[in-house]
Length: 305
Length: 261
Image (cartoon, rainbow over all chains, first blue to last red; front, side, top):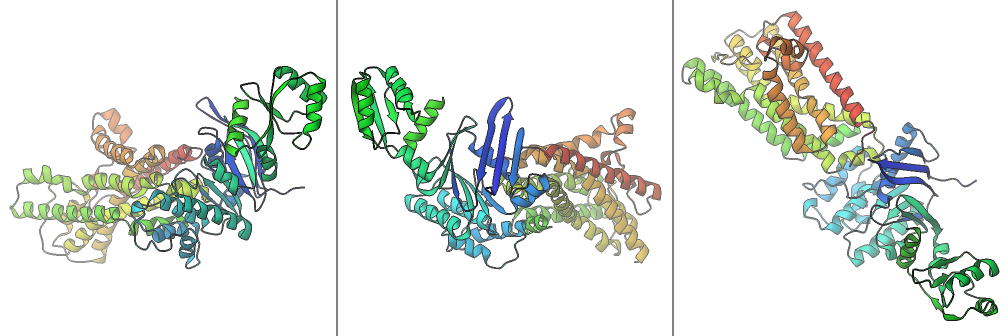
């Protein structure tokens, strides 16, 4: 049986009559990078806040390191690092002093861990410069450095590349990948930069309106998004019927203009064409198209809407 | 303990605790000087008991205590230190207790200049008058000129210690406000207004007074003298400690399942 480092089972959360999360279940394996994808208000941050103990679910269970009770969850959170929304930074202190505050809070005795964390995120040379004078990107990096204190086994980062320039984004991407590979850290990331998330994560959790729409591995996503056939014809309803009943596939999406994105028969277009001709469907478009994660995501939430 | 260490590391690197401490120190000096000049006839009683009474420990503890609770402690909600403590595995009860202990230490720091002045001047020939009935002036006017004895020092420390406990219990509401409002400005305003209102309210009429007598706001501070009775000491101790306990519980139940943003 698969052992999960973090599991959320049927988590629901309602705020003032608004259902922020509805029966959300996720299971995170050790050493993998998970990308949490969703629009603003989809429930990504609410889910992260519940995992971090900042909010309580209305129903459902949370397991950290296979333990569900409050005491064990607290103990589990000591093995986690999280940065949700904005980093916890004291503006009137330097980066290293900020890290010393958090190091003391975590009860870390080791010397020089703060300098190591700063070096990892590329803030090793900020000296006495106060955090309030940092750029947004530097603040994000400092926030990540804080989460790295104590070598956490789970890292939870909400929009970690916000405010970073392209080279900063590439560095953080590299860092996240290294942390997962080198230290077997499990990383849960949320981001609006879907292309970036596509390059970083191993697994994707797509959230919309408080519900999980899809869990996909990177390979599954590649299969879904990299290529598909676009089909247009004179009888779209009949086409859907043929796909379902004759070609035995549900792996297609009907677009608002009634054209169809078909994710099967990429390597067997002959069989597809033959079936359409046999059923007298006049095809006006049959082409291979490539998608981005963004368009796949929009497609998915559009379909869910 | 980790949280407390982190709090004091953070406070030692901030200007605000030192700023409120310096204000408390200046106020204590001005207040003692007023008492001395009234006693020597160089300052009128009306002036001293009017505007200058603002420098009394009762006024200053209410004002600076509220500011300290807001600026030094509540800002942890605004800069997400509390959020990080929770997501880092610290229990909510531990966070409340840590903030209470930090507040007790900060309040003691603010009251320290008044304590030091009573100890320094109690054993000199400097004359003082109790132009308003506050613990500091009671001690100064009673003890000044007396010979140093361990017993007298003990009484001074006891009176100061009980005064500090009463002030802390009056200001403990700031901890409740801190976990309720999570905004420094609101905590400062609400704590100071509560301190300003509840004192005078307790003497409005007999019914209110009889209820308020069970709170630290109803304790008659003029009785905090070197010759205070054992009954007054025990009663004040119980009321103050119970009040602290009640507000600890109120804070705990408010924060136990609260959303932290």
